[in-house]
Amino acid sequence: MSFAGDRGWGMGDRVAGARWLATLALLLALGVAGCAREQPPAPASEPVAAAADDSAAEHAAKHADPLYRCPMHPDVVRNEPGECPICGMDLMKVEPESTEAAGAAKPQGQPLHYRHPHDPKRTSPGPKQDEMGMDYVPVYADAAGPEIRISPAVVNNLGVRTVAAATGAPERRAATVGYVAFDERRMRQVQPRAEGWIEGLAVRAMGETVKAGQLLFTLYSPMLESAQQEYLDALRIGNRDLVEASRERLRALGLDAGAAERLARAGRASGRVPFYAPIGGVVTDLAVREGAMVAPNMMVLTITEIGSLWVIAEVPESQAAWVRAGTAAEIRLPSLPGEALAGRVEYVYPELSMETRTLRARIVLDDAGPGLRPNMLANVTLVGEAGEPAVMVPRSALIRSGSEDRVVVALGEGRFAPRRVVVGPESGDRVVIRDGLAEGEQVVVAGQFLLDSEANLRAGMERLGEAAR
Image (tube, rainbow, N blue to C red; front, top):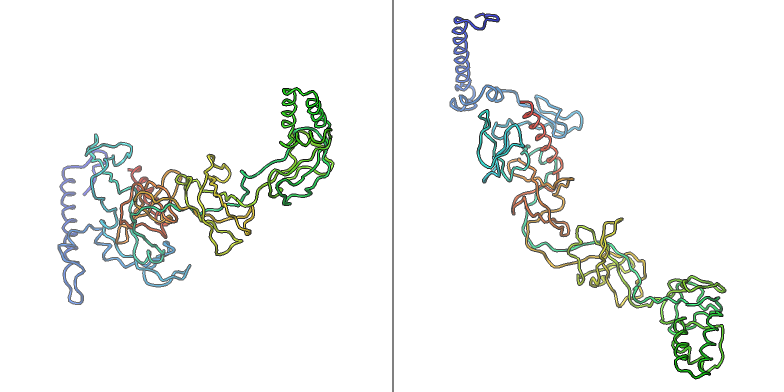
């Protein structure tokens, strides 16, 4: 048989080529039949009819020597059993896979749409062929990612564990931290409304306890002395309107309600005015010292009542939607080991913290014991009403990325496939799956990142293969 050069094949060459191809096909058929024929020492590996259906590559793979591979180092391959020279693990036998097992299993159900085999952007709602006569490939709802298959030995070595997705009413529970604070509604500030100088300061440091009506300090103020003298002059004149205006000025300058009566009994003005504690409690802020000058815009000290405290809980943003006034709370403090304080959320602040990405919830403890002190850290557990029944999986099964959330589904017989899911609220260590997963499906909770990476790598190689066609 010869070639005709740039003039193409000749008639004789074509006949000779056809005879040569027919002879080659006959030899292959005889080789397959002869290989499948029974031999006295050992039975045939498979029937003749099964061997005749195999391709040349499949038939050669059945008669090749078995390979042994390290489960942790796939590049270590040997023709006989042994140990890995890197990690010392026993080499595992690589079982031959059939063409059907090696490929992806066909999803069940109606396809979502059909796409072009070479251009995924070209889709069709029904079966279709392109201009070259190529059939569009069906895309199923449960075929979100490529399927991979690994042997049971490798599954065991990787520590792959699965859990069934279960349906239940998600318990709304948020375990977070908080801190103890003073009840800001029980704070009173003492602030003179006239210029003057502090004399006889009775409170020397923050944290001191005062009683209601106790003398705090004396303020020497010429302005207050002038206002007192105006009130006494109005009393001598006897003009009712003038007396009332002078009394109103004394109240506007910060004197208490009994100051006018005491001034009327004394009959003379004084530049030294005493200031008394409006409530009993603890001095939580002290801004002056003995002899200091004060102005109307200055705060002298702050008194906070004892007995009621707040616990400010920092609720994570992911669980802030269901926390509202009335939500039950359980509070535990390191200073009270083994004790739990019960309370309820009284108020939820309207603004989220930009630094911590948390929402503050206020819990009021009316009967705060002696073991509670402001600025103590607290472990707070908020328990809300149960939500609507939904499919739930452990939080560890979820693979979060910037654009989507995925889980790895175990399909049985060593087959795994990633699945896109729509995630709902979290409930303790479990997550609600709104779409993409059905009750009873097995999801991987350990080793899912390795399986997901392998599936993504295989999908990328398939796309490269399609682009090269």
